[in-house]
Image 1: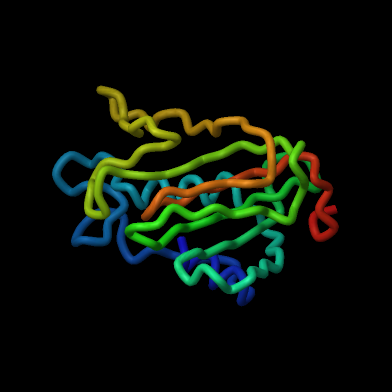
Image 2: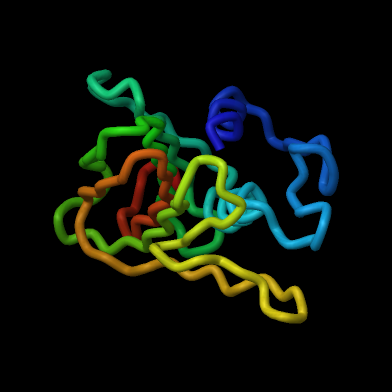
Length: 170
């Protein structure tokens, strides 16, 4: 996800993964063809992060935080999608987004797992698993209010801030 964010900031419009299945880098498990955690990360990126890349600044105090923002591509004009990644393996991080305010409605898509090497990933605390027919689960955010978010260690979250009418997205 960090690579996608950096490339988008530099004007890269497309990105191609090396492999869909195989090796240690595949989007699908080679044994049973179930999605690996990266599959869901890319699915969320594609669903939430639009083409309009916004400038993100921080106060520089948290070197374990990565932040990227785009115009949300799948809803009405002016909504913003933010990706936050907490790279710390020990410390929870709290972020105040300078888009919107305490009354801003947002959809949260927080991804976590039991360990950094887990083949299972959770969305908002619930495991994402295909059904018996291999159908991908529905990916839905959890609605919340406010412009402050907290991320546990080694987690990342997408946040869609609604009706903020961001200037770069109008």
